[in-house]
Amino acid sequence: MTFPERPLSVLNLGLIEYARAMDVQRKVHREVTCGNSCDTLIVCEHPPVITFGRASKKSSLLVSEKAIRERGIEFCLTDRGGDVTYHGPGQAVFYPVFDLKGLKKDLHFFLRLLEESVIRPLRENFGLNAYRRQGMTGVWVGPYKVGFIGIGVRNWVTYHGISLNISVDIDPFSLIRPCGLDLKVGTMSNFFKDEISFKKICDMIVENIKQLVCEKGSFDEFLREPED
Amino acid sequence: MSTVKVYLPELGEGIAKATISYWYAEEGATVVEGSDLVEVSTDKAVFNVPAPCSGTLTQVVAHEGEVVGVGAVLAMVEEDTVSDSEEEEV
Image (tube, rainbow over all chains, first blue to last red; front, side, top):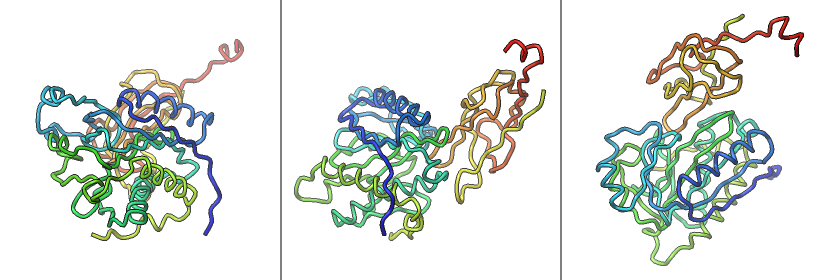
């Protein structure tokens, strides 16, 4: 089945501090909201940072903010949904600034689309049994959570998005209860003997997001049953 | 002068309620149509509800931390009206 193409800009920021990336995201959000820009996908990595979402609880932080900073990790409050998470080099971060009025005005639809954007390439290109868990938004491989999601929506235009652990040092996740849960965190490099290409994975996910956005009508696939 | 109710809009299939997470304005404040009025959150998403008209936020019905259903009234806004004399000046 073929779908009509939808314009999508991709903005690759490389390794960029969290606060600076938020500034860029706010500017892009204004442009997309005004109709001056088409939907835009921001791709980047962040230096080590722990971010607190709107649903974060103090109990999700297992050490003090001071102890976090002493380890060279920044600490930021942010305006996305969800609880606490960690970003660091080797983790791909995707911030889709998409106008849902042209897709589907449905927060759950968009969360499922983000999950699918990572699940498909991990399954089809890397042979990993990536899946979603009902009621636990994110992407999982076996018992490990590898993809983390938190979004915001203003004027039905999205901000924030999804991060995928590719080769990131996952030790700093032990300082927090990621997503407010006691869960096992994984990174893709754990599943392969050979080095995996960060850029190659990012490119695959970008292409997949382009495809998924075009397939906006095929909503049913996003709702397929989890396989865990 | 007329009072306009602010409702929690439909947020998507299967989303029946949300938590009031942040009010951008306090009672008595002037609000501008389309600007952020209140932020609501679900598990992994925050959604900004805009002011439906320009005027004065006269009553906050649902407060931060409260869980509200889709279609619930969140606030009342007294809509600005342009007087005849002001209209003539424009």
